[in-house]
Image (cartoon, rainbow, N blue to C red; front, side, top):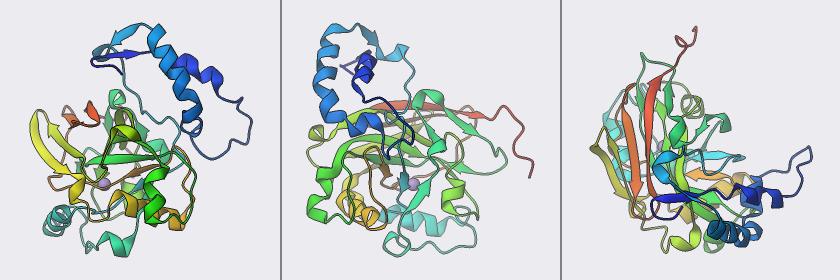
Length: 279
Ligand code: MN
């Protein structure tokens, strides 16, 4: 990515070690990112610049081992969730310190260009704009002081959420319900992870606008909490939570998420080509 153009650097994949089953945990590109970066810089100089608008953006992380979610991690979102009884009907919303994190199926991963598919057209699906952390280095039981050293970079994300009574990890794991984009911004370009402004529009109308300053559990604390339960591997992603302003989306809507630090992506909502699940 270079201004409004992108350069194809996929030739760098030749430098990855040969893949042998069983595959190690972690995304291979992120695991070897430090070694690949000088080669990517060389390829950037040689390759043809393509207009950004002419390429289809896929997920910047191809094979995350885990997609970790942070439930109600903004105070104003906690308040709106408790007021809106359709979000988690029949359930009391508890603070993140009490309920911990959740996991989204890795098969829910999608890039912005792949769009979002609604498989339950008669139920409510909401947008949740989030700042996403990409783990760069393996770690377990990390302390807060060392947590940020384990970050490879950041991107923006949509934690698309079917509303209802089912468990979070189930409702939020539909295909295409974890959108990551527009690209990986490496950690050195984000001077303060506690000050990342971001916003979301639906069909051009602003619905969410916040800053990671408003997080209940900071990015460092989320890494401490996650790594106390499971080893974090390179390429694991943590969706850090959504601020207030969630609302339902419908087929035909276009969602845009942007941050002056992390870029901008658009994702279109469509109905599933099948008629929905038979239950
Ligand atoms: Mn969320």
